[in-house]
Length: 218
Image (cartoon, rainbow, N blue to C red; front, side, top):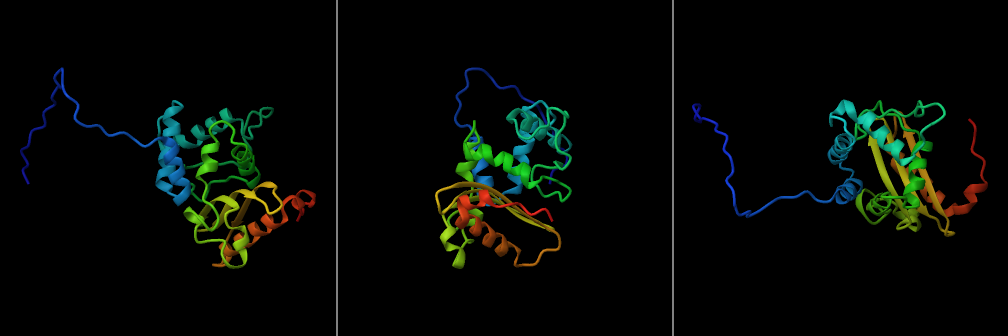
């Protein structure tokens, strides 16, 4: 390999003919692909783009503040009286792989309400969610005893070494639209994912009956 190469900067001339260019896919397609296959790298890049778009520097360190700024603009669970976000909202990356991230199910459900109603551009998220038993990361799930929920649950999967989660929208058996978030945290057995699917299928079967249920306090 040559070691005496010289780098020279050139200046393009005028009246040149463009023979090709390369453009990014629309961000809506990035979002759909990321949701479908749980592409953590793509999710991180989307968060960095949010950072740049909102005037931050696009670094990992900027992601938390940038995302909170975006959430504020979207009107999602910001405590205007206290002038802060909930204490249980900690965003340390865009991929969700940092196990010190904290996002409560209640906060996720606030976002999902906007997704369900397709507010603003949130309809893009709805359209991109994997479908139980049919597409993306849910294509192989909701089989066997849960087959009746296939095609009726639209949700994003989540996984780290210490957690499994599933959150999204259910077109319930009785026609009710439901939003849900299921989080499991700790030293989890291999059966956890199946248990989550069983519970989500239960939501699908219950439908509007869930609105009359009392949430346990313990």
